[in-house]
Length: 242
Ligand SMILES: [Zn+2]
Image (tube, rainbow, N blue to C red):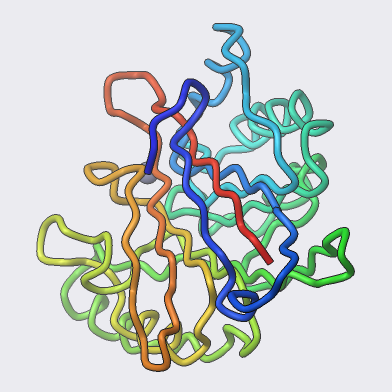
């Protein structure tokens, strides 16, 4: 990842498009774990990078309260014209709030176990899927039963999987590797191009490539931005070639 003035820059060519002569560039700006601090971009007059798609991988709030969702929606309104589509998933801080989606009127879709389709200028379709958060911080018994839950609902053919929690042993290098094994199993079956997570603030804005058989690569990104000192780090700017 290359640090630029307005974000951490990375490029990735879709596995299906590697042999193509002409590629379409889709710029994706990725945020996560902004924890009510997103407004600092506006107040400080920092320039927010533009793109085709904006993704937020969850934890935009601290408590999942209505006023926090309204404040976040105000932030989305202020940058909405810079994107063709905005997709948000819940993090652990807003996971139980079924009522939150209507507050996010400036987001194209709130993906809580839901798919979305983005039409590229070259007629190609990018399929996205956002999972809800399956907790793993709870009592050991509960944690074990939760971790058994399957992620089979992530559809085959998905190009970008968004999950607030990381997969097991990938970008979850803190504590006792709290990433989810079932999630990793499903993602390795679905074989998306891109996996976006957050949650792990310690390793925020980092990436890892997972190599599968037949040279299939998955670009895994942890986009967590809260630096823990009341400020946000820079977002990730991904140029995705399809
Ligand atoms: Zn967080």
